[in-house]
Length: 219
Ligand SMILES: [Zn+2]
Image (cartoon, rainbow, N blue to C red; front, side):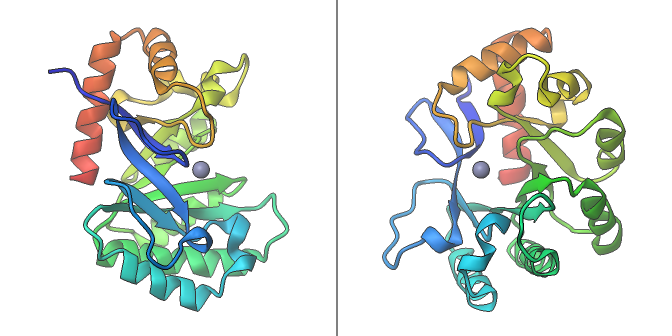
C-alpha cells in the first residue's frame, strides 16, 4: 500500500488522498467548532493583538485535550511585523509549556527570528519537536538547528526560481524533512514531484519517508 501525501501544515481542508495537519488560528475558533480528523491550533504572532493572550492560552489548553489535536501552532516569532516582540515571546514560551504538558509537537512560524529560536532551544530545552514551517534559513542556520529536535518543512516556494527554499533543500536530510501547502491552493502532489526530482529520490520513496517522519513525531 502506498503512503498518503502528508501535508504537514495547511490552512485548507485535506482531501481523502492526503493526510497531515490542518492549522487553525485561535482567534478563528468558534464555540461548537467542528474539528477535522487531524489539526493544530496556535496563537499566531500576526494575530496576537486580536486576542487576550491569557484567555487564549486557557482555551488552547482546553482544546489540547482533543485527541485529534496533533500539534500546537502555527505559533512563533516574527520580527518583521509591528507587534510587541516581548508579548510574542512570552506567548510563544507559554505555548511551549502547553505543548510539553500535552506532549505535542509545535508548528513554528519564523520571520527573522532564527537567533531567538536558537536561544530558546538552548535555554528552554523543549522536550517536544519543533517543525519550522516554510523553512528558508541558510546552511549555517540549518546546521545550528540540526543539533536540536527540529524538522524543516518546505512549501510552494520551492517552485520559484532562486527561492531560499530551493537553495536549502539539498542540505535538509530526508529524515528531518516535511512538505506543506500552507495557504497555497495547488496540489501537494506537485510539490512532492518537484522535491523528489531535486532530492533525486523516487516519489514513492519520498512519500514513505515523510510518512515515517510523521508517524515518528505525531504518533
Ligand atoms: Zn501557515
